[in-house]
Amino acid sequence: MSETLPIPTVHTVADLRAIVSGWKSDGKTVGFVPTMGALHAGHISLIDIAKSRADKTVASVFVNPKQFAPGEDFGAYPRTLPDDAARLAAAGCDLLYAPNGPEMYPDGFATSVHVGGPSQELETRFRPHFFDGVATVVTKLFTQVRPDCAVFGEKDYQQLLVITRLAADLDLDVDIIPGPVVREADGLALSSRNVYLSPENRVRAVRLNALLFSCAEALEKGEPISGTLNTARMIAESAFDLVDYIEVRCAETLSALPGPVLDRPARILAAIRLGDTRLIDNVAAHPA
Amino acid sequence: MSETLPIPTVHTVADLRAIVSGWKSDGKTVGFVPTMGALHAGHISLIDIAKSRADKTVASVFVNPKQFAPGEDFGAYPRTLPDDAARLAAAGCDLLYAPNGPEMYPDGFATSVHVGGPSQELETRFRPHFFDGVATVVTKLFTQVRPDCAVFGEKDYQQLLVITRLAADLDLDVDIIPGPVVREADGLALSSRNVYLSPENRVRAVRLNALLFSCAEALEKGEPISGTLNTARMIAESAFDLVDYIEVRCAETLSALPGPVLDRPARILAAIRLGDTRLIDNVAAHPA
Image (cartoon, rainbow over all chains, first blue to last red):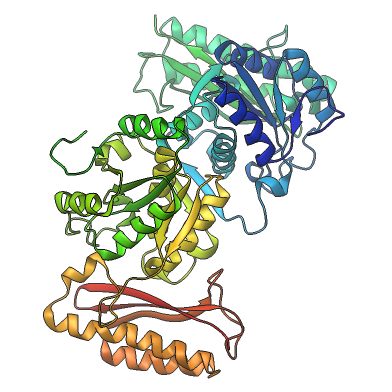
């Protein structure tokens, strides 16, 4: 237990399990929000959802090395535990679980979890090992915390579907609950990586959500998918420094749509770069 | 529940969990023995160990397609559920869990678990996907049953180490307990695949354990590892139709020994073929 943080905090699986199994013995349900810290209002909205679904809420803060490739921002990723603890306390979270690296990946650690299906393409084309890292750490966090439900933001929409698949496939007995994207007043999706943006790139960043929403509007009006995407990609390529992808996919499976127009609930997903910062966003599109 | 079998039997995760969580609410501990059926005295020895370690014992019978490669004996693998149920009942096992294929791997299933470390080389050289299939099904069985302990036979020594690694790495909260190899009067290790042996190959098969025990004796006397292994391989190649491997490894990690002589607890492991039947066996060797 850490005495200096404003919320009950544990750093080991043993301490975590002692508290959670006490709750379970008292018949309490447990909601869980795994995070990498650098908490913002988007994360807090997930805590609010967990609190509405379960008697007790656990948040984890762990910057997971296995989901960063060499050259990505693992070292630079913001680490703000005292601030995170204060935000979680203010939100009424019951427990902060902040394991260190060796607690999660001790010497000799040799296991990885791979989810196919929804992990294919999109993020995986640009971050080939990302979802293996996510699936491995989330499996561990779930078996450590043993929550009744866990909340994942739709901001990382592909991740949400990967985790849903993982939880079902490995019988982890956790309800996966999606949390809507939380946006700034100008529409920029909240992200811990937004702090990397220079002032001028922060201004340019707002065009990402604007573009996705206008795509959704066009598709919902019945405009053809391929033409809409081509136009969107052209606009994106002039607006951003690099466009990893802009795609329209089935909202449930992330498989490609048969086209030519929207015929089922879909998601428009994009990843772009502004300077060294990679931003992702997505919006829903529903057929008329 | 199956009414026709002589032991309480469940086929679904939901029915399994209902029974096991009832036991847990009553404060009972649960021991688990996962099997592919075709039970023999070796399996029953694992049930006996589980019973000595826990209040309630669950055995599973599931021929796991994911641990067979195309061309291996998945289709031919012996399936003897009524006989298995009778043996488990006689042994005092409390519950048989016999899921069907779609209960374990429903449509859309997309997840696999990989354990590195002890899975490398030996069996993996000859059955490259075997331990991924084992690790995936055992992860599921553990999250389904949630046992306090699980018993695995030393007959599959590499598998025992892989599962031990897996359980630690994914925080599965299960004590992995080894069960000694059970042998016929002439020393042949019991195996569900022994039924495949023709009468003359059954006679030849006895030379496998004899060879391993004589290797252990030589190494324990301080004879050099490399010479002992070379001799053993030469004998094996004349005795059997094919020798996949005969190796001496660290008993704890399965890593190679530095040599030239035994300097730590070791395991001598072999896989050979007699006709179409592949047999594995292993024995311990301790430095003087």
